[in-house]
Length: 115
Image (cartoon, rainbow, N blue to C red):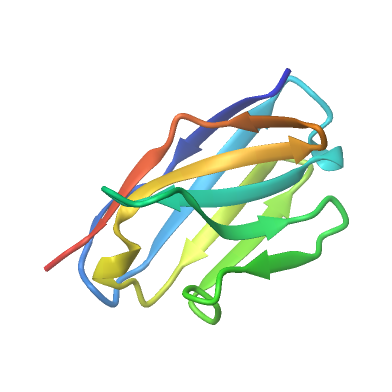
């Protein structure tokens, strides 16, 4: 069992920055791939970024060059640094831990980009 707790969301102006954190507990964190997904009102949940247990990352095209995903296995935490935020980044952001076929979700944190 893995518990995920997200933090760091909030309201920011266009062009601003936020850093999301996802703290994991309850299992062997380093063996899990970790990802951030987001869901905007009326839209499907989509992958934002994923970091594999070995450290390789992949990003949605819409966030490449603006968002950076990293993990600290010593702290059982992943971070999503979000720069140059746009209004279309507004969504609830969810953390996910995956070790196929098992997956866990966090409760989500709201990110609102608005002037």
